[in-house]
Image: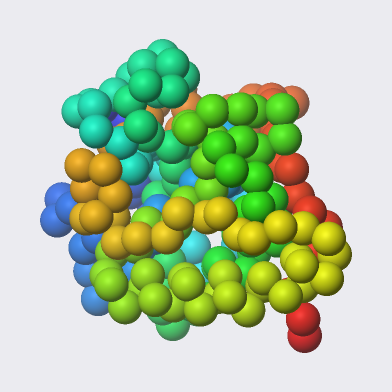
Length: 198
């Protein structure tokens, strides 16, 4: 799917010529699904140390899906956000703590009123090692959720290469940085209000 050259908020490229997981020395990437991708991307681009963000579809099997196809819940994809960060300024656990705190990772196949496989919680990493880091962060968050009366975390955690067809597909350009273009646009964050222990 053709997208603009640059993230209109951060002013940085949204596409790497070397692929989703290779952004050069000192930068790493992760793909996050936490409900409607407009709001997830907005949260991510505001975090310190973020190089770029872009929205798209991951974890499914239909090649080059369109938004309309993904909304049928038949492609297997989740709405997802590519997050590229500078390792000298932040790290994966810090980003994942914000991710877990700003949506409800216990709601399977939905976030709030948004229902369907495309709204499932997911973390797709570029390496098996990063997937293990994500599992450890989830395990640390579970006791706080349990204490607050929530069920088990249902977030799908896997290397991107093992998720569906193993690819991240960029969404249509009008979805990119949607809430910067449409400040009064739809935000759905079914957050639990639970935070990580200090």
